[in-house]
Image (cartoon, rainbow, N blue to C red; front, side):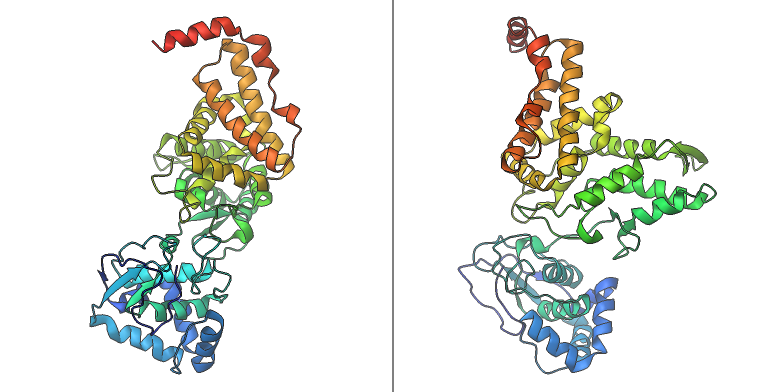
Length: 423
């Protein structure tokens, strides 16, 4: 991040490097429905709104009205000015190139309203900074347009994000990308309401099977927020209520199958099928995820770790084993982030997660009388839960011991078997 203000022009700040310039038309930004709607609404507020943006956002806006600012953006449609994106004080990596003004203004808007996810951010145009703006969406949209018109930009590396569709435990969605699960469940509970049931089933299938959607679901206040190295932003109470609603008794639910035909299933089946589809795809965050500006992709692992269905043996192969393998495939810093986030998990949810892992290990060892890769994988994740519990104790250390391993496994025989597999 940095501390540039509109109109300051290019500025060196802490030795930041400029990245490859990107060219864009400022008028392209107005194609973004949500931001242009906020900006257009703010245009009617005139000088008073502009003054509010200047004072609260710390931006040195001139005396022109908000309407004049947006007019300038529209009239610049033919001006393909080059934009240099630089890091601020050397703390952040350069932001990526921007193909259009829409992505640039969106990035500024998200930076102003949600931040970059870095605790010690020093960019005064970033919500994550202690000195950052605290603006309503209209004022934030106006400031984003103004910042995008500058010739040099100091964007935090985490500003360039895309907010996908998400499932939130709310009655009224905060935006068009939010699926109000609470409202859908209430509507679908009325058996004659086939349309609501079909809508609910489709929404659950879409969001729970998509790693991006799931990583932005079940958040605090039912709206998008950034994750940091110390907080996931997950609303665990809402998540518990959502799971309770999704795993309700096996009441028939109307859905549209792959052939386009209306048929009956259960909400439990839809939920489990979605999570199975999730783990059938590539869900491990790529290189660079789980760093100071890319924590959000790790949230899905926390969401699934507290899924009550992990206690059911019938889902051990399709979900449990794949979850353990995916977590263990993460980098050590990524696993450490999940471990810290789990400190926010309430006692009941955390204990259920521990019980699920102990149950899997006990059942597996009782059946196969050995410690194979699946048991080892589950034990490693149980170790992650143990380290989280050391920081914030929610269960007794005795609950993390597994007697079945000591009682049922012949370690001499198991060691010989392990040596054979290493040849």
